[in-house]
Length: 130
Image (cartoon, rainbow, N blue to C red; front, side):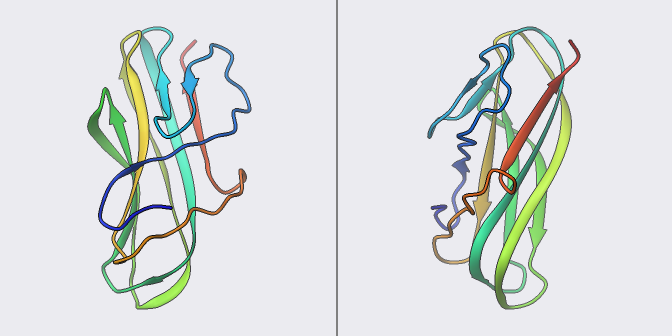
């Protein structure tokens, strides 16, 4: 459940490929760079049906070393409605060895919303230059 008007760390709980043991899952989900270099991170999330009002938003943010680094995706509601909503996007980032990345989610519907529990709809990909 994602609380209203607050950032929350996304826990992408299922690891498909993690060749360097770089991901820690759970409420403190974090990627730790195994070496310095360029990385590309993309994420996608779908929220369960919720009531949205004009100008409310759902956004994915990338935090590097615990600091807000970039928006990965933002969905601004254009009408008052009830439906599934999603946000997705990606960016490149230069990392030092041991540097960390987290994907956080934010929504401001005025209430709590749940994330769809489907690995095909909620995922993160992190690619490196090695």
